[in-house]
Image (cartoon, rainbow, N blue to C red; front, side, top):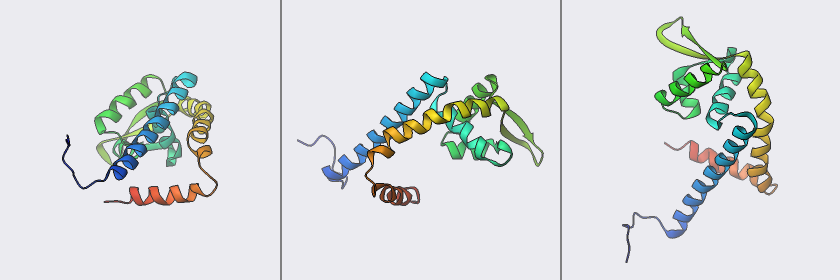
Length: 151
């Protein structure tokens, strides 16, 4: 007896989809645990600090930052509140838009990011890159590019 209606996906297709989900969640959980354990820095905070560090002037408009880190505006606001309390970011008004705000990486944020980055990169290598065969990286890159370019 079928519990769920058939929506045109085969068992094999569902298995691939679920495996992708489990892989992403498993890698993210590992990175999160390593960053929390070694640096008291959640993965989402690391991502925000990285995006700011890579931005011109180490600053981004809050709306742009939310899109880059895949958080809702309210979720990013709460995260920036915590990072600001920890002295890792500040907020600055946008001169060209009275309602706009920039998130700006502080010196303390740069330092915390510099401390945490080796841990993050070791985790990416151990949980992802080292598990690929030599020719797999280009294939995975191309497959993921197709998925992220989807409408």
